[in-house]
Amino acid sequence: MMYYYNWTEQQVKAIVITDAIADILPRHCLPIMLDVGTNNEEIASNPLYIGLRQKRVVGKEYDEFINKFMQAVVQRFGWHCLIQFEDFASQQYKKKLLEKYQKHDCAFNDNIQDTTTIILVGLLAVLRKTNKRLNNNTYLFVGSGKDRCIFALDSPFKSVMYKDKIFHPGLRSNAHIFSTIALATMTCAIRHVEDDLFLLVAEKLGSLITQKDLDSDHIYPSISTIPEMTIKIAVHLAKHLYKQKKA
Figure 1 (cartoon, rainbow, N blue to C red):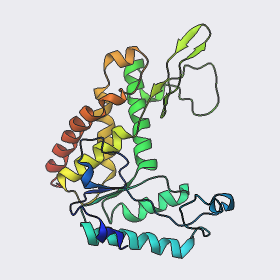
Figure 2 (tube, rainbow, N blue to C red; figure 1 turned 45 degrees about the horizontal axis):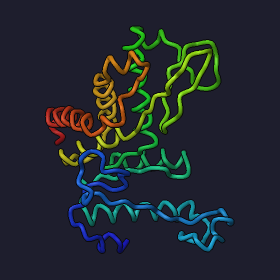
Figure 3 (cartoon, rainbow, N blue to C red; figure 1 turned 120 degrees about the horizontal axis):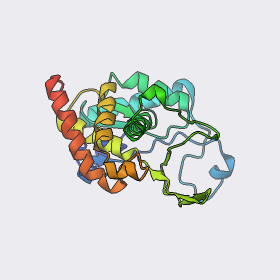
Figure 4 (cartoon, rainbow, N blue to C red; figure 1 turned 30 degrees about the horizontal axis):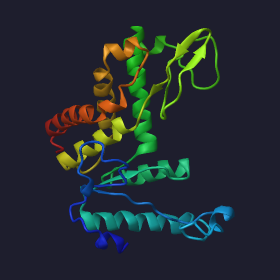
């Protein structure tokens, strides 16, 4: 873990945050990829491959490696340094990491917590769009049917024509979530990223979706609004944290 001590910036406040999109100074962010090997022989044999040319570390050795990583972060940058887990290979291990470190360190998981939060934002927007209760709507998860379906993608997608009508797929982004969590956590120097913060983010972001967006069948705000909305929602979280005496 010597690279922590070779990092030129002394005041790192967030690790594995994918963007400095929340007006967070880039010098306060440290991107890290944990290389534990690969089981893909084709990739490993490629002369341009820069990763470890060994089988993936698993089991106890893997757990010990992650634990040393977490300890090194706290030792080098302090307990208030935010750690964002993202894109770990195993869905089961994502949950295991979250359960182990969420209440021990200042950590959260983008794939689990941010994704479920942005889905909740969409559901809250649907309630405003339909003027119905949550249990009175039909939700389509897999397949297709005759029911009306409001959906959004996490990457830009071309408009589609269906039954002589043009549909413009909405674009949703976890950046609305993790940027807010990061900014509020760093500003308030909280010890743990608790689950209630994600619910507060969902409720506040849902309330900031404009009627113009809803009239256009867009249940998420434009990506261009992320910096502005991040600050508004982070202020909302900060007020909550100070009220709860957690800041």
